[in-house]
Image (cartoon, rainbow, N blue to C red; front, side, top):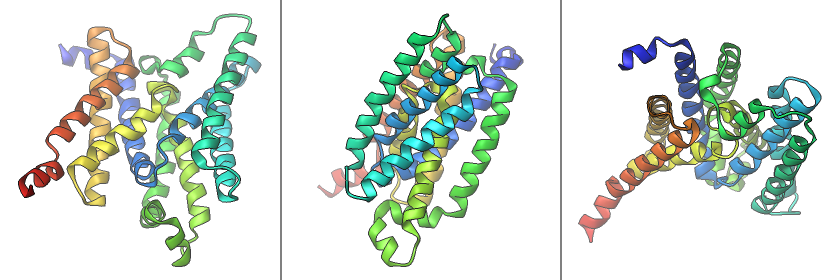
Length: 274
């Protein structure tokens, strides 16, 4: 039965997109969790969705607009925090509500119903095109390449940005680079799980991996493995049982997270020592 499913070209594309986005979110999500940037995923996802709605409203390609709005949001919020004018979570909260209002406004201005717009809001991975898979693959190569190049510095600023700056690391530029990579990751994932759920994919796999190990290297590896596994299984379950793909992926990841909490080696050690 599964082999018959896997011969379908649209399902093959969906699995490829799921593996790409699940792995990518899990890589960037490690730094998001360690740096305490959990809420930034929600704000940036909705900002990118505004770019999508505006693109469909004016009749241009949605991905460049989504990237532009996502990058603008993280850069502005980063600058506001850096200059001490506003805490990061406050500015993201403001952008979160403002961008959702803009998205609703742009949708209301459309003269006809457009199902593709809602695909970016709720996720529509089974309808992903070959061009979108290639585009996602290129963005994944860029993001993962930069993460591998600056992984030590990213871990340093994730734990203590001020100490990293004092040690001679260009922490400010690297922090903005990290924010940019978060925005690109969210844009890649919009078609997979949608703007509403994408930040869950950023948080749950690395949080699950955090329960399983105290090693940063192993945490990264576990996070990627979990992200790819739950994303691909979520696609197969959604196709087999006619379920929405985004919620299927996120709920499956949540179940794995609770299992990791229940059977975490850290928890077992605490119980034994007590």
